[in-house]
Length: 179
Ligand code: AMP
Image (cartoon, rainbow, N blue to C red; front, top):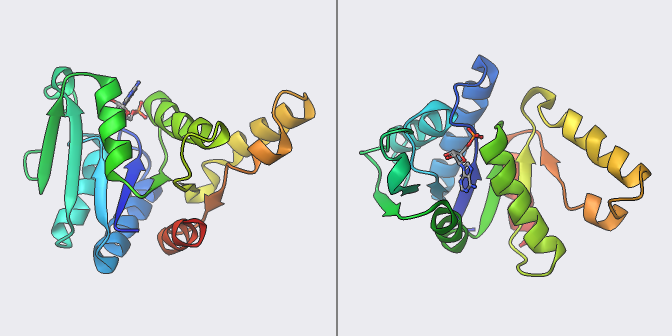
């Protein structure tokens, strides 16, 4: 697991989220795991990148040209790739990573995470993904996915692709175990 892509919010999150994301950065830097992420300096994305760099970690950002100003591209990264489209961003982040961790996030985070999950469902790839469950952030999603299974629109074996971990170390260990 040389490089892990983290999907997470471009908004600030709660103080507990900030603490958990800093702990994730420390653990990744300690293990020598490269961070791949969306390249922004805003919100939890910026928190993660700053904490990785402060811990002497390696950080690769990928951001579309149109979002360089909007999301304030991080200028202090080990590498920053400026691409033309959102699709290129997701594709490059995917190609650069060996596995994925999903932090607290909004629509963009969900879009990226579920595209990666559906890629496994359809057999396009087998890169592992785990959701970092800070203070039960993902519990409502678990409830919704169970509801979808009950409604016979989600197969149980696909439901099981959605996995959570309650700490940074457990998330990284679970990626290694699944790879
Ligand atoms: P959010 O969780 O909404 O704060 O978004 C987290 C990150 O996902 C931000 O950097 C967004 O620009 C990014 N994002 C949103 N939609 C997409 C998309 N369709 N493809 C790639 N990245 C996206």
